[in-house]
Image 1: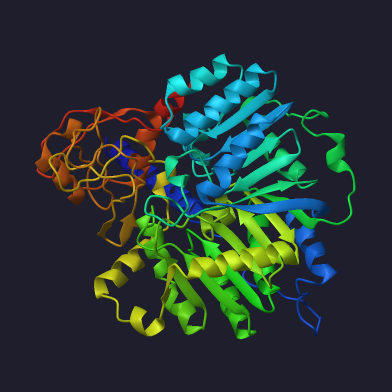
Image 2: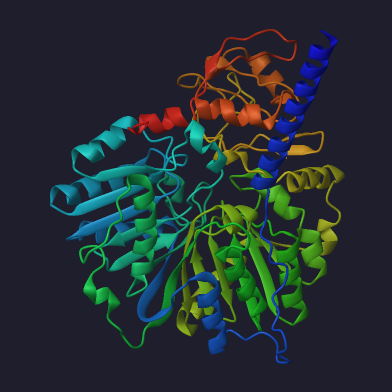
Length: 564
């Protein structure tokens, strides 16, 4: 009997140790960064090649797979006003093919207009292929998807979650693609949501930079789409309909450009090599605009080294108008170090600044979807239009300086006087960089706030501080605090205890009490929503509340008509 008890105890201990090890491996995987720490020109006394040096572009192509060609034309498509009218015109003029890939989509005028245009073209005989990210498109209704399929639009969902693919849950495709007849391409940071409408200078009208381009570089964007389509459907598209002969014709002049399609890999990634080489080769100026600016230790070092070489380094990022507060806090935790090195930092004031661009020495630039954080460098697929051109570079410099007139410069002396609790939140956001939005992004998630029903707007994030952990959730609109939400609302807080709920706008006390509640552990919090099971919920007093179905992950993807 004693021997059996010893065996059971040893088995229990080993099981616990195995669970701890596997959990640690999972956390380390989710928080991994990129390994490049420096860029060196070994044995070359002149140092790294400058942007104008042919070795720079040759190195970029070798280290990242980016292919630059001449004969391209490109123009910035700024904000909704500068993007959607031209995009709708180009789509309506399509004669053979349309390929579209979007990361984030929600119901509204933009999604409805796209659907109307795609259905009209499909009925006219144009082959229309549409890829939506399974997480980012959760808010779209089944009826929306069904109407597209009825009009012969081919719709596929990318990276749906299954029990056997949970280990890849954090790997998302952040790519934006629109290609028309293999001749016109669009990429940037835009999506299918109405806050991308407008001029970017008013509240709730996001500041965005996109690009419309023509020429051989369009084939790079088409190839990025083809990779996603093959992953979704098992069908690799090719042939002259999607890859027209004229797209491969050598043309002199125009913009020297290409599309950088970044894919995550084990070890050093093409994305980190692309950013590192671009920073290290700057000689005069480096202007970065990025909505999620959270550089790790090594990339902060590269930025500081650029400033020490005499490069004018400026960072334009979000202000309190951000849609993800914890990323803003985490980014601000890096400000003081960068400001001390002489780097100038600005926060865009009128609205959410969602642009993802950089311009080096007025001629080497990038416009696309890539953020300046570990997710984009290590986890995500990204699409960026990259160019070497003084004319387009000058236009981007001008746009950048115009944005600075609507931004607040962060001064070191003033920033050092910020309250101690700001420093605490910044530290917490920085030491726990997991972005839970990738697994908990749902129109039915809300945070407690004032008002009769205690539910949050989309732009608010729940930030829970305690025990060295800070987490956040991206909240979609479910109520204005004074109107009962449609359906049930699940309220989740993360730091140290249980999951709480406010069902159908009732139980206000319990809804607010849940702000002090947390998940027992991250695995429980992540796995249960993904499996679509009902969670047994309890308030702080331990009283059992009703079970509330979780409406994220598989259940949302099924609403778009996926087959599982």
